[in-house]
Image 1 (cartoon, rainbow, N blue to C red):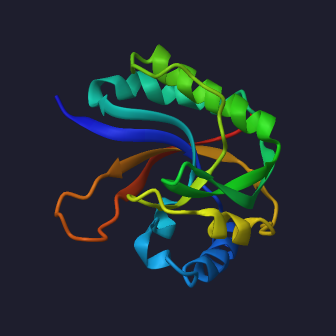
Image 2 (image 1 turned 180 degrees about the horizontal axis):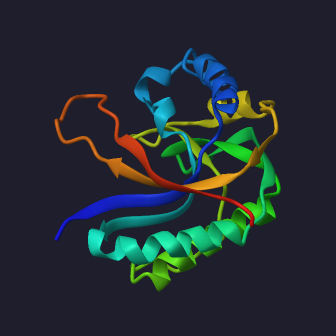
Length: 190
């Protein structure tokens, strides 16, 4: 039986990613930036629910449940704004807008996975974040979060959720990034 590593996510549209790319280019010029593993633009997303390794036999049950979660959620405004860190391990860009609806969509996506037979961790408070870089050494990310403090991207309307497959690097090539592919997407609203 085959499986795929999957997550449900909101992906920023190209203009929002362009704005963020400009801010990230400035971050990458800060001292110590070469010691961080920067996330490729193709990997920028707001995770709603990490499903892990999913047996393909569960997908026919998962697809309609995620579609239902999307259809029950109306489109909502969002923008990339500011940033933060998780310990000294991950630097991220934040979100601003209708975060209540974003969190509701995250709960609905996790529930859809659970009801499809996918074992899910207990849902904790969803912190909307888009991972920009990681550190193996617990680096001081304060200069980067300070530099992101004033960043405020253009508002857009979230109109769909995507089910994304991530293929982890297997070649052992330094700096190799995971590959992401949207397997399916569903529009929000009725």
